[in-house]
Image (cartoon, rainbow, N blue to C red; front, side, top):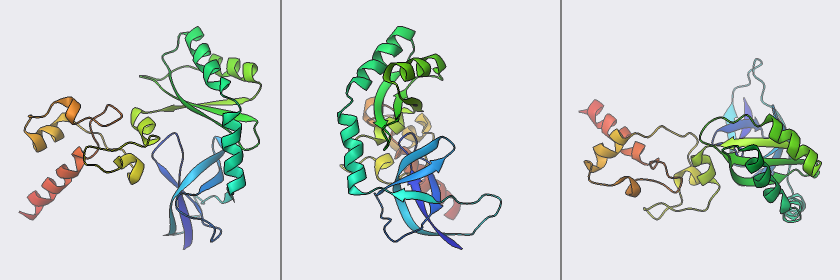
Length: 219
C-alpha cells in the first residue's frame, strides 16, 4: 500500500492520484507535477488515501509543493502580462474561431502560457497556437473547458446558499436530464430556476434521483 494525494487541474473536474511524499502536503495546497501535457500545477483535493501499488500503472511522484514565494511569483507573472488576454481575443477574432476566453496562467519559469477557453464544439486551433507563440514569444498551450468546468473556477453560490457543488466537493460531473427535474418539481419550475451559474441544469438534480432509486430497492 502507498499513500497518495488527489490532484485536480484547472481544466477539468477529474482528480488524479500522485504519491504523497511529504507531510507538507495539505488540502488546498498547490503542487507541481509531471503529466502527459508536461509540467502542470494542480490543487490538492485529498490526502492520506491508501492505494494498492500497481506495477502496470505506477503512481507518479510530485515534483514539488509550491511555496508562498512560488504562488506570489505566479500571481506577479500574470499581473505583469495583462496583454495576453487582449492578444488571445484579437487572434481568435482574426481566425474566426468560436472560442470564448476564460483565463490564462503563466508557468513558474515564465516560459509557458496556458490559455483556457470554452467552445460549443471542438476547435482546430493549431494555427492559432503557432500565431500566439510567435506573438508572445512563449510556449503556448490551449485548454478547452466545459461550461461546468468554467463555473468551477468562480466563487459562486447555489440557491441553497451553499458554495456550488462542483467547487466544493464534486469529483465527477453527471449528465443531468429534464426527467430528473420533472421528478422533483413535477414540471412546475422554469429552466432558469433549475440552472446553475454555468447555465446548465444544476448538478444537485441528480441527488434526489439516487435517493428515489434507493427507496425503490428498499421498498
